[in-house]
Image (tube, rainbow, N blue to C red; front, side, top):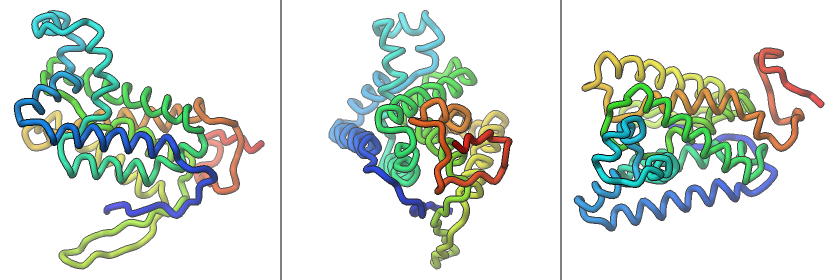
Amino acid sequence: MIPLQDILPRRNPPIMTWILILINVMVFFYEISLSPLEREIFFRHWGFVPARFFDDYFSALIGEPAYHKYLSLITHLFIHGGWLHIIGNMWTLWIFGDNVEDRLGPFRFLLFYLLCGIFATLTHAIIYKDSVIPVVGASGAISAVMGAYFMMYPLARILVVFPIFFFPIFFEIPAFLYLGYWFLIQFYSGLFSLALPTSFGGVAWFAHIGGFLMGALTYRIFCKKRRFYLDEYCIFGSLFDIDKR
């Protein structure tokens, strides 16, 4: 299933979502202007390398300043590995980011995005501490946005397309079904990646899992007001402890 849009109005223009998409696109066009060797150096320098973060000897061996491993926790969120990577991420951010930003406000949304993105990457890095492969992409931060959306608007309608051979089938499903299905795919893919790394490698599954859970569990900390909006629906009752003031 490929999401096309959500059927949920917003109150304010998603300024920070637009800015984040613009920065990602600008960085990507800079990447493709580089030669293959320059691009590889760029990824290794500004991407997040778990071994550089957890192994001081490795960090000293490659001769980078100590602060750089912390800086790369943020810079890697704006780097993408190809057209499909950035289009998929930015499309998903556009679908779910505007409504989450609407509740959080632009600056709280940015803080939420960056902190959850860092947590998501560290979730991956803790499992693959010795990896020297750079982690790049905004997927962890966007997964957190999806987790927040799952909690905020579980019954919002998501328009999706399901291609059957050459015939696209369009239909709407509740957000909790689409996002729940997406999370289960990430979860089981992450488990299989541990058992079959050659078949499920190349994707930071645990960053997606960690980001989604972090976003779902912490979004209320970043909300502008603890109140219940009429366009929010919670199907799980008191489990989520909604404040209806």
